[in-house]
Length: 482
Ligand code: BG6
Image 1: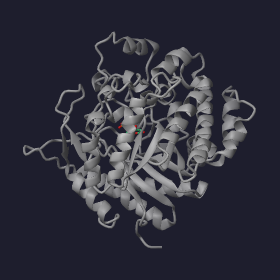
Image 2: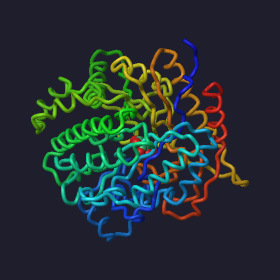
Image 3: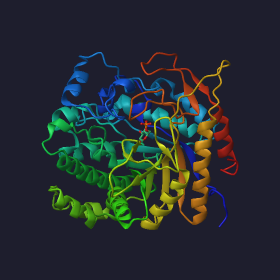
């Protein structure tokens, strides 16, 4: 096999509406769950992730009755800058752009009888702009947000009626953008609901007596909604491809002690569970055992299992930022990650946010996923969040970002050489956006810098970092020049 990226490899970048768009109350958009997540400075934060809301915080945010700031309301104002931003993506040579549609922009309350035409027209303009440059959109239907009204009235995904609301939304956008979008993803990091239930499923934990039960019931509704979306997508556009999306948590045993290896296997199964359901079409036995041991009972309708089995995804997309370590013994120091955490790995270095950098882990993960499922894989998130320093002349030398990305691309190329079918690579946050876990913009991922701070102050002007020209060269050479 040649050590090259395939000719039609989908190079690009990935964002999510709630972290990028802003315009949270423009064009008839309803409030989304992400609009209510406040920025909390690190010193005041309880733990690393700040994506969980209590009922009190939720109500305060709804009534604007605190002094909190909500950065996802302004994002980086893509809503008003999309032409300029897409032109910059095109200048880098993007073949693809992963983005999400904000459900609340299309159905402000979730169950409106008619979609919001202004919201639909906004994405028409975005897709037309992408088409101008031959950039293929990859669109996530649900990326960490839903109309707030569904949480207020239905308690989020715990209510089975949300499946119908979601599938109406999916059908609406599949039909509207039939000729503009070929690649779809259903739920971003569908496994996130287990650790960040508000973020992933609109569940406010203190509203439930048994939150684990609620999480897996809500997840079941998402699985069914995802399968119905797969079905609709195929009916509406047989040329389209639709995938699932997993936060891949590559996990190593701390030692070769079989007890550590077994513990790690169990941990990995809990990560593969989600793709098992969406790719194989059924709940695996290990999760049934886990449910039985934890008194979790999933309420399923008669044909749910048949729906899951009949509507499996075409490809697997996943995010990869770091790897983890597990041990059967006493717990040592834990290293944080995107909503998840694991033991520290002494062989790895960490980002400024403590995420353990492991490029080889990406090759391992690609091999493991392909061995297990034998369908195409798409890395739709990977990147380094860092504090960028601006030189006096306004330039930004982000060699750390270039190094991180280069090391990971080298390993993807190796995995392709191993025989893994990889469709593409979209680096996370090609333009600076709001962090999901900490709601700050100062954790920057972009090739493009945006002049805005964590409180929304700044000109919102865009400028290129050093990595911009580097990535442009990578794409132009189809990954030969890394
Ligand atoms: C993934 C999410 O978990 O990680 C993205 O899908 C997110 O939405 C990304 O932004 C990076 O995490 P963070 O917390 O640095 O923004």
